[in-house]
Image (cartoon, rainbow over all chains, first blue to last red; front, side):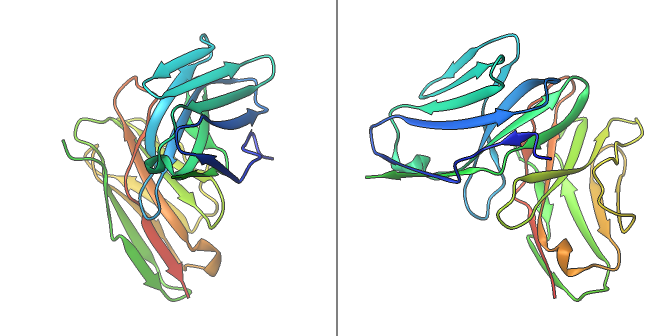
Length: 112
Length: 113
């Protein structure tokens, strides 16, 4: 039972354009959401997060949108750069349960 | 400052042997987590330590897996009688008190032959 789903295993985008990574969840108890970036042979690096009381959070080139009614969140990267090429994981946590539930990841490739 | 460190970075072992994986969290972080990532999969929660509270072991896949955290800092994940399906990257993360963002180490790549 996958509670966090990333349905696109891969995405290719041209440098300078927008990258949109999507994530769906099924557990209505999730109230905090995060995006991590992972390069090969490294641990995940925290990118940006959003609480369920908000519907948007922005940090530089990265913006996360949360649609609670649709149980959907997305990460927008604009403009995309070749160095953004990595696997992106969305993750969620519920209330006092501190463990994160992760999606299976999306491989982003930004083409120069 | 220094991030989360893990050792060894790679471990190859034979089926049936025991292995110990070590995690040094970021100094001052009260919470410590273990996850594993099997090939092509997302991260799977294993166990969570918070201060002096009893750990949340709800993610441990079998009684062959155990973990301890000594002095509220370093943690060791032990896998007894390893099986081939234990092959994965084992990741440790830590977070400060009251903060939900977790910071990950580089992982230990375990291969059971």
